[in-house]
Length: 393
Image (cartoon, rainbow, N blue to C red):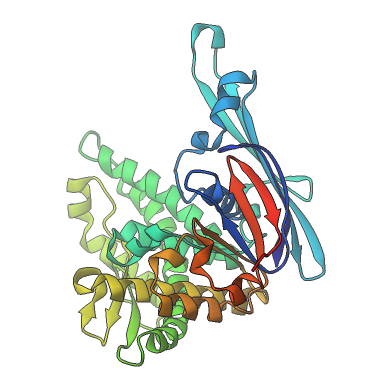
């Protein structure tokens, strides 16, 4: 799988861009704030319909277009080769006035998604392009808040498992409704059957999410452990441990976990009513990184240990995704090689050697020796423009 053509209009600092990309390792180099990360962000957005940089799609519109055009918009499009198939992916973000624009009323941002020129939902988009993104801020996967680790699992799983993505979306909608009902409990009399209705849906979708997460973490753990053992020179053994808010065993099926979930909800009912929030479920799951079964890297790991764990995890994700889809995902490496020492950098580059397309950003191409540079496609990024370059030893 690889991006054959990337087209951007009014996206970030790109007013217009038509960029043909080869199926190989691509090095995007240039000074800071020229648009290197924006290119990777665009590909990630086309794959997931979400930005890894911001939760506000409005920030993706080129600020000049936003100020000068009558109908501000951004367009992202890609031609994607998957095996012997060519897919066309397009997302358009367009600002529309709400109410009387002349009186200063607000605008709303409309997102339109097309796959092979047919309108699609965001749910239908995910999985058309498979990507693994590695950014410097991913180091916080180990020691950052649990929301980041849950988001990591969600993005990875949604790209390979449509049922998981559907269950997660429905679980989140049910969670919002159930929390709203819990907040109203003290203000008005609530029929217990009304809460029971939401409980059953919460259990139904939540069980699917937890079981799929359990199985995915087990598979990632197996791959990650072997990679980490080699990265650490055989001195450490890493385990990924999935910690749901419910007791969950490897042999548990949907029925058994559903019964456990139901019993736990009943037991904590009074506490949930007092706090006005759902206390049990996949929205409170945790993922731990343990070294030698004792050291929690999120609490006690050194920066070097945390970096090694994240490198191993991202490489494990590449192999795991290929095993589930039959194709290599597109690997996006944003300035991470400068964060790594020579040993980890060489290990990562060696391990991704078979990946069909890898996009790497850097401010300094001299991080790579001539032998590696000669095998890359080189592009210079400058002021929202991209120039292909021939290798010159």
